[in-house]
Image 1: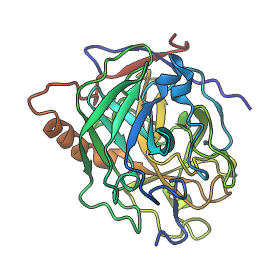
Image 2: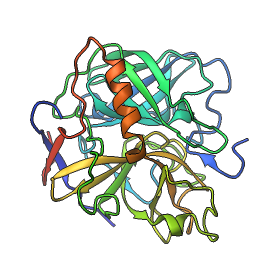
Image 3: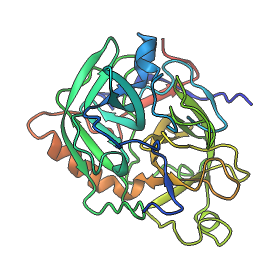
Image 4: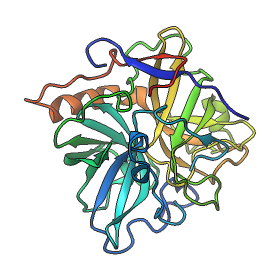
Length: 318
């Protein structure tokens, strides 16, 4: 099935043991002396295709049940990559651009690693990372509070292919949190035993009710109210290894905007019936994110996209 998605069009206003739970992180990541991680933005594929294709992705490292994304369709999607021998880079996790200086990702993507991070966009434009803040109550064993924030060394420049996503406002537009127009994107596996994707993938998912997702026939109490479940009731559509840290973006027709409702965190397998993907519920972290954005940009004013962000139209930016 081919999905037709509402597409970003322009900036609105003044700039917007892991046990049986497997994090969507490639197996083998972090094993050996691999000293450098970088962030390759999804929009890189628009200008220099080689930058968007993690052809040396760590084996075991794509969206399940989706399709290749149209170039420029998700301008906030970021690929977290690991430097390998030969100065090549391998995809590890996803990330989400929330303003010109900041990227959100999953906490488990960055904890326990002493690496230097960089942002690569467009024609190899690089951004060093000034700081990394993992939620102080992140628990790797249970994936509670699985969220982290990168502060970039200096700002990226917005363009048709580089844009932030809206963070959820204090008062959600009606129907947004239970909406069915939600989408995931990433470079992870296309199946549990699949291969890494050379290009950004996308899929439409639905928000699964908490009572269903956390019931005895599903995760059985492992999901808390700081998490949100998304996928398909019948399986087949899901995030997978390598998609951790990537966005769960939901479109609201009333405001004509996409909102970041979740960050890919963990799941039991990929695309299994009764086991949807589990995401960090962004509405529960609005205060923490706002506080960190303000502190990380002290003395360096930037926009915080809580209410000002992308508006959308039925076209693709070129």
